[in-house]
Amino acid sequence: MANSQILVTGGAGFIGSYVVEELLKYHPRKIIIVDNLVRGRLENLGSFIDNSAIEFIEGDIRDVSLMDKCISNVDYVFHMAALRINACAANPGDGFDVMLKATFDLATLCVKYKVKKVIYSSSASVYGLAQHFPTPETDNPYDNQTFYGGAKLWGEQLFRSFKFMYGLDYVALRYFNVYGPRMDTDGKYTEVMIRWLDCIQHGLNPLIYGDGETTMDFVYIKDVARANVAALMANVSDQVFNIGTCRETSLKQLLQIMLAVNKSHLIPEFKESDTVNPVSRRCAENGKAKHLLGFEPKSTLKEGLYELSQWYFKKQKATLYSI
Ligand SMILES: NC(=O)c1ccc[n+]([C@@H]2O[C@H](COP(=O)([O-])OP(=O)(O)OC[C@H]3O[C@@H](n4cnc5c(N)ncnc54)[C@H](O)[C@@H]3O)[C@@H](O)[C@H]2O)c1
View 1: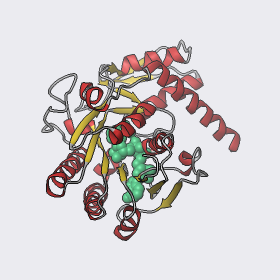
View 2: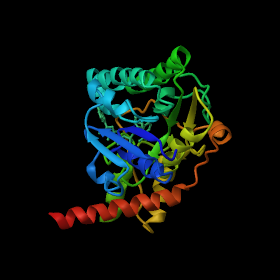
View 3: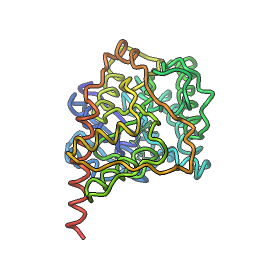
View 4: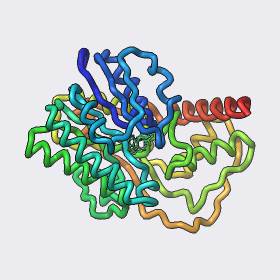
């Protein structure tokens, strides 16, 4: 990787900014970050913005001439810019332009400029409610009900077809429930963690809507960043990998661990939920990533939730003092 040029779309976002930090450990010549800051934040770039290898461009991946310039000299592309699941549902037209059209244009430019490998950020959303737990990569995606999941699956298939038509090498990573410092505080499942941290901070009993039995596979952000770099370095192409821990954690268990790491004795309260979550379970079979990428998640949920809590409380304190 040393001496290479790398493009990271969405590099001012949650996962993108950690991927850039991880990449810098390998001393690439240049990392170009393109992000329109619709969700990303400049503060996410804080630890590396002054590094001479970094070029940050506040721009849109839908701008084909900008992307042409950015891709013309790069060796590798991490394509992470995307709209969130709720944003796609609220405005599928934007979802189409960002997730499908811009991804198609990016793949076309990667072929034009003979990019050596693309690492594409996909999602466990492609499965909807999976058929098996733990879920192998071979489970079918027919239960997905979301525009976002459909778009991610299409992205995987786009790169697959470009590999066969034009020889463009790629790896797609299906992240499960990524969490950690810098995460979105109002995301689909991250919002609940933040709501509970607020309760812990203010001494209020945390609420669980429903029975708390919905499960997820929480994977720590720094592990996800390592998985991205492993996908670049491994001699692997035309493959999709689950990036999760193979540990299924219910919301009830998540809250218990969160209370324990914060030495809190608050009592969870249950409230009836007026919504039905169509995806009641998530758990990644992660043997393929271990075997072919040499990637294994390192952080335990306890460690990760401790880091998340410290970050959030510090951030709240800083906001309080800035008012
Ligand atoms: N966080 C998760 O748990 C999770 C799970 C599965 C998949 N993913 C995928 O991983 C990738 C990174 O996710 P994240 O959690 O860091 O989200 P994020 O929203 O923090 O990062 C995405 C970044 O893309 C940027 N962006 C959006 N539209 C853009 C556009 N038109 N032009 C330029 N930049 C644009 C945003 O400003 C943001 O910084 C995304 O592709 C996401 O779909 C994330």
